[in-house]
Structure formats: C-alpha cells, structure tokens
Length: 196
Image (cartoon, rainbow, N blue to C red; front, top):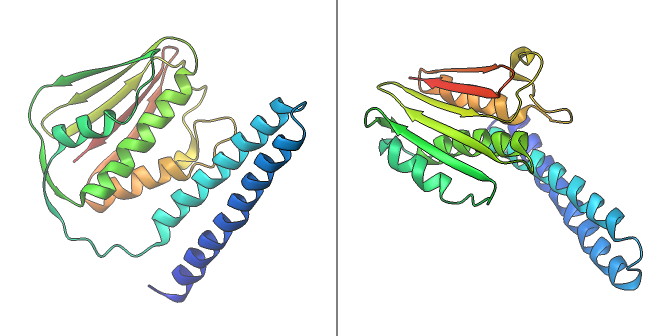
C-alpha cells in the first residue's frame, strides 16, 4: 500500500470513531428527552449514510491480497439476495445459463450489494420487483423503482443525495476482471449490466 492509500485508509478508520460516538450520544440524549424522537431518527439515518460512505471508501483504499477462485455466480447471487428481506419487494431470478468466473468472491459481492441496495432505495415503500438475469457472459439487474432523469455522468450517482462511490466501485471491479459496467434508466426503472 502506498503512502496515499495509507493516509486514505487511516482517515476512513478515524472517521468511523466519531460517528459511533455521536450515535451513542444521540441514544443517551433520547433517554433523557423523548419528545424529539423524529429528530433523533433523522440524525441516526444521516449518520448511517455517512458510515456507509466511509465503508465504501475503505473498500476502495484497503489493499486486496485475496486470491481469485472459480466462483459459481448464480449461487453467489442467491446467497447475497438471501440477506435482504423486504415484504414489499420481490426478487425474480432468470437463469439462462450457469456462469462461473475466476474472481475474488468478496469483490463481486460488493457489486451485487451496491446494485441491490440502489434498487431497494429506488423502490422505497411502494411494492416493487428486482429482476436478476444471468446470461452467458452477462448479469443484469433491473428494478421498477421509477429510474432517474439522466444517466449519471461517469457513474457519479443515481440518487438525489448520493456520493456515487457505490457505482464507481461497481465499474472499477468489473473492469478489474476485464468486464464492463453499464447503467440505463427509463420511465419504469433502472437497469444495470455487468458484462464479462
């Protein structure tokens, strides 16, 4: 790890400590004053967003010493999706073929997690579907969360208040394995494609 990466990783770690301390004090404050619950919840929500950004940043800066292995992408997808349980969201799989790649599983999970979380946030509290298709050399994620008005420049963000780190990370990981990452939107929702 070079000096720049060391500084970035150290800053990211140091950033998480005050965030945890702030969250703790919000909990303590709420025990004393329960009349402002909605404000405490809002502060916790914003702190979680900050923490998520820090985690994404860490994933980009920490050294990767893992060894690649043959991974059944279909199985990895199902395993990742099984972590998400929302009564208003249905996951629909279409497996046209079995896809096996030489990858670091942890990195591919990062891509899947980011795309699933984006779809869940786009759908929100309404009823929605997340379609996942596995083709010969392609994985497609599609949701009916309404999409966005313009394709984000350089994959910066599809969210009103997003950092864009998640989409950037998806693209970098896909490119690391010689693949391509593309995201499109229409009036129905968003479609993300990873092609190897």
